[in-house]
Image 1 (cartoon, rainbow, N blue to C red):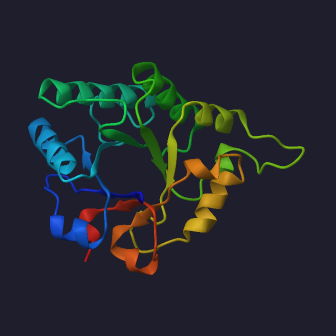
Image 2: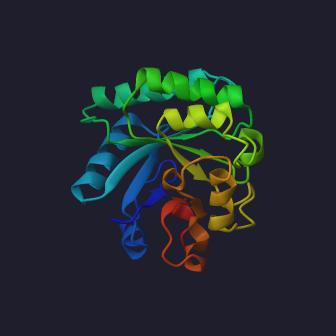
Length: 219
């Protein structure tokens, strides 16, 4: 099955016509939504044979600051517990979790991943960041230059990396190979990298795989 995972906009049920037309294989819902609505949407997604996931963002101000990586991880963990209390059947593979943290500080990201793995050591997880951020993560790896300690530790936390292929204003779309290579040249395995596409520009990327932002941008 292709990885074609779509972010669903806050407060929305899936548009199943769009989901089918674009060949989506998974849907991710925002953890800011009502707990009962998230559970209902995840159960509906599973019943239709698709993969369900949830996402949280570092800048949602839910009791943590933007530089509190550990606090963000703890909030996501609490939301999962609230979903279970509302009837969701949880496993290490379902729902999948995406941590959206676009900070450029190694310490913030590592604090987030360390705390997350303390809380959820085996849960299927991805981390999405702005595209083109390999420079602060570490040097380009060569025969005499190994991966940075940051890259090595991120790999050890077993998370998928999801570089965004668009700018903040959603006025540009970027080449997936270029932004994948930005990470693999720092030492991240290519098998761990899945680009994040602008869902409004998917026609330009025939055969795409990865994530798409967001359902509301699909024409």
